[in-house]
Image 1 (cartoon, rainbow, N blue to C red):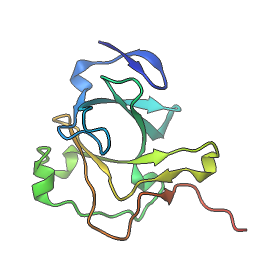
Image 2: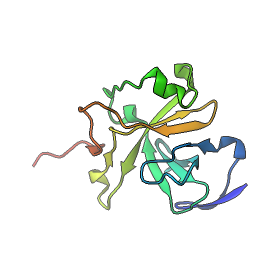
Image 3: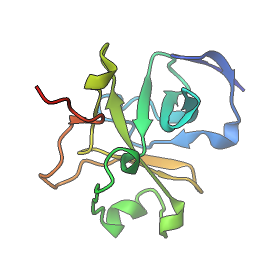
Length: 144
């Protein structure tokens, strides 16, 4: 099937790779189906593209690529919402905001995207921890 995308124009996707977000993404609750697309020919950045609205796409990172000490606790009850039974089924990402100055890019560590890669179910979780925020710089800060 072909879809229109925000960054790549028209692309062909495999329907078997479509991810289902029963509750959508915060602020975009009406969009339930997404696809992961590689971005910038690098493994560090990925695009989560809505398959029903070409204007809705999120840049994602795997948190440990930029925040090696990132540690969160999501309850088994919450993981059961997307049918996760063991760690091997989990893919975890954070949404990144990229302004004009790439060095000012930030990651939302407070609300990770968790995907069951086997069942193709996804959910955005808002953590109850206070050590993370929605804006963590992903590149080292220069000293003034």
